[in-house]
Amino acid sequence: MAKVPRGFLLVVVLPTLIAAVYFLLIASPRYVSEARFIVRAPSQSQISPLGVALQGVGFSTQPSDAFAVHEYITSRDGVSDLNSKFNLRNIWGRKGVDIFSRYPNPIEDSSQEGLHHSFKRFVTVGYASQTGISTLRVEAFTPADAQLLANAMLDQGEGLINRLNERASEDAVRSARRRVAEAQAKLVAGQKAISAFRTKEQFIDPARAAAESTQLIGGLLASVAQLRVERSQLALEAPQNPRLPAIDGRIRAYEAQIAAERAKIAGSPNSLAPRVGDYETLVLQSEIADRELVAATSALTTAVLDERRQKLYLERIAAPALADKAQLPNRPMSILTVLLTCLLIYGIGLLIVSSLREHQQG
Image 1 (tube, rainbow, N blue to C red):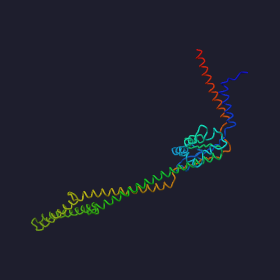
Image 2 (cartoon, helix red, strand yellow; image 1 turned 45 degrees about the vertical axis):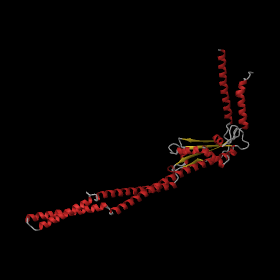
Image 3 (tube, rainbow, N blue to C red; image 1 turned 90 degrees about the horizontal axis):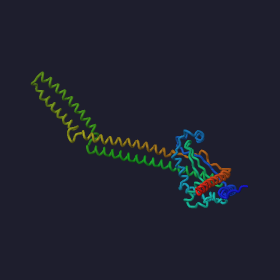
């Protein structure tokens, strides 16, 4: 009978035997509670979670918000919040749990940093880009503990989504109210400027006054034209008629009045033309402020309505289940993995030793 090499016994047989003893006799069973959820907007409410699970492709989810939930669950803040509700050391370090599976194991510490590092041994969160479905997988040493922690983590994720909703809504409402206040201030300032202009210039509406003067000038011009026609006819019939000087006097009076009215409208520092321009500028600014106030008020109304309507939802497609059988460790696969690893190491070692011997002999 061939003798088994000592190196094979030390590198392959002994580690595999130790692994078999550990996994078959010592390793504590671990129970897994798995949940699936999506983060979606209200516009997707027409698609049911079951439809999402069955259809998969074509459903528009909120991946960035889903990743935010993932990051929070596994973050230091998330672990700290969970540990404040449930003493994780008591859950993952129960009496009777083997020393290598429990928390903390011999190479871990019980600090907050150590807890955060070890947390990833028991909790994994994944995301399927094809369906937009996130998967939460929690391990514990009793089925109830695994389910309890999975539900608590989903509750924390919902709390994060609610805080994101509240913050976004509060920011939108605050911004809309600020725009309304600014528009109101502009409108009040515009109205005050118009009132000050009217008091200073003693005009309610310079444009209307200019229109009235223009209408008066038109009437005077018509009267002058009529008088000129009358004078021409009279001069043809009787050039020495004593009425002609009187008509000429009336024409000169009308023309003087026309010149005076035109001076009021334009042509002098005190004319209406620059006042009309200033007034129309003030009126335009007031109208713009009024439109801004209407738009800002409408935006505020929309923001308030949106504040009452949640923008994002964390919806559970599959709630955390209560496991009736330990899924981990996979004892045969674990032993086989150790065996294959040791065989690989042994084989590499043989190759190295053989190469060294050939080098020495050469």
